[in-house]
Image (cartoon, rainbow, N blue to C red; front, side, top):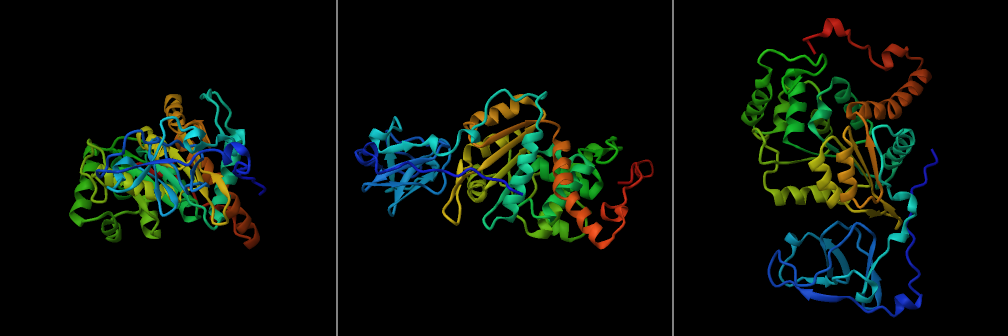
Length: 390
């Protein structure tokens, strides 16, 4: 594997235009959660701030936030997180003559997406690069792959199986989603349906519209998702796998949630805070079939990450949806930086990842151990005999 992740090249700060630039102006926060007048509104683009004649660079950034000077370092914070007495960078223009340097040129042009991807587009090269990127981040000391899932991803038997394989092989470090995604995945493992539809045959089952509500009642009676799984009620599914492996997931609530599940965070500010904690660790983000969660992540996630060895690399974000409008909106929120849209069937996408990343490795192992092919891939269930049972 010879993937080359683009690295950031800092400006030559010995140049006169940088040496002559003024230091940033600061405003003091007078009330928690309220920024001072003329605060600088941050961007996804790598940004330097001059203070004490040094150009400071934050470890993470985010869109539509504020830059705070603390102990000689710059931190990018949400306005709601500001505390009285903090020093906020002031600049209405974000130009160098205010001590702020937005340096888009630090990364090569290749990391910036272009508009125009449509369902007719061939995504072969995007898949190839993604597979290499996933392998690289899984094997990196500080790699962290975050998946953002909508409920439709867990409605299909093969997709749920592929997600489990990806998690078990180290390709999922964190999962972000909502009440519906988790509810229907657990419903699939508990009653073998998702929204009352058999996850294998896609047929509606009698009184199936009660199933997800029955699941919610059972989990809420037990007290938590983890306890419900530990009781043996859930046969399979990505939430069970992550729970068993102690891989974190953050579930953010919505005003229209059924239930919701006990672990769903209904407090919007706390949900944002917990989501941001996960995103600040992320080196690769994969968003599938959820416009609202994808847009939220696109805004909050840093455009780059500072590696343990000091390298600055982009945080790639993939947006996968069957609707062009969704990926275009997410791309705009991401400012097209390190953003890859893929307009395709989301179930096919997940299965393609599993086939490319897991199946070849299993086959190599099987060949070395002289294991028959039908054993390493798992004997497929006969669809006709399975109807209504899986």
